[in-house]
Length: 72
Image 1 (spheres, one colour):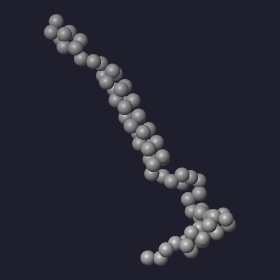
Image 2: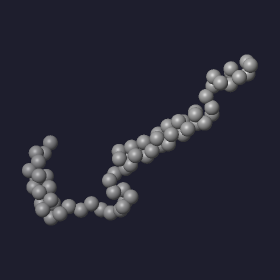
Image 3: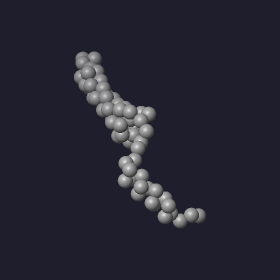
Image 4: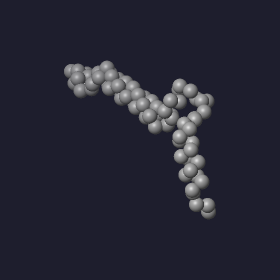
């Protein structure tokens, strides 16, 4: 009789393992999503060593800004 009371008071192992697995997989998914959004630059997987190039108009505008900049 005492054995039945002790067994009935605890939760089965399946009831504890399922939520822990869901919590762990959610944490892993969250870390991977955070890493891909915050740490890796956009397009990092596409072309890593591609140089960034400005258009002709952007280069002229940048040259004008740098030429008009006050010198320290």
